[in-house]
Length: 244
Image (cartoon, rainbow, N blue to C red; front, side, top):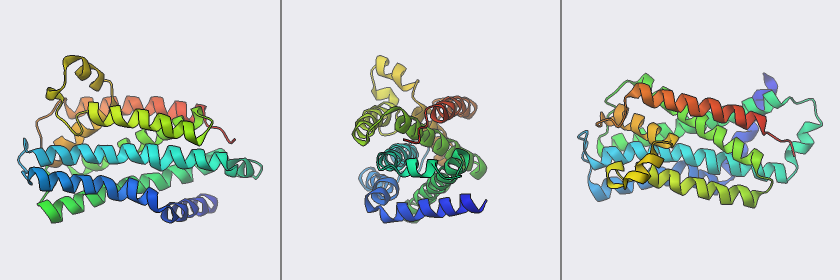
């Protein structure tokens, strides 16, 4: 337990030293959400644009945590042979991953808390649904995209490769999931693609829970799809983990 705590604190210190990571993972998503509020107005009705965007951007924030707050740092540490040096110590893979994932779950909770705080202070947002369901959605979404980050870092041998593929994952996921634009605006073929993306279901769950927006799917289906994605990505992320 002491080892996991020490590794958890080491991850926290490393994150706090990376100003760009703080900006991308914590500050940029909530800034974009605030921009949407200023542009579209803080219409908090279930059909209002701001409520739709807030839920979508919270999902995007967790996606960025997985891609830019997980995949990239893991690839950089592996390329810098940090994991190779750890591998020759008595440190177990389970302890390392537990500490790293726990820290990233903490970041996910901070992201959600920051969104709700800014939404409440700046635009009067109050969570309409169950806080426990919101917490569950944040935890599942965080674990899902962090697992995706580990999978990308495990499959790709270089930092450049991880960065390139992360961008390839990021833009389709953002723009085709309904997080930024309504799915009804998209051609039928793209709506089919959207139904395969986990962010579609996470954003839908957030919108339903936070502002009681009209659902794309039932919350039960949202959580079922997210749980299935999480299981697959978790297994694959563990399978392809590499020390070097």
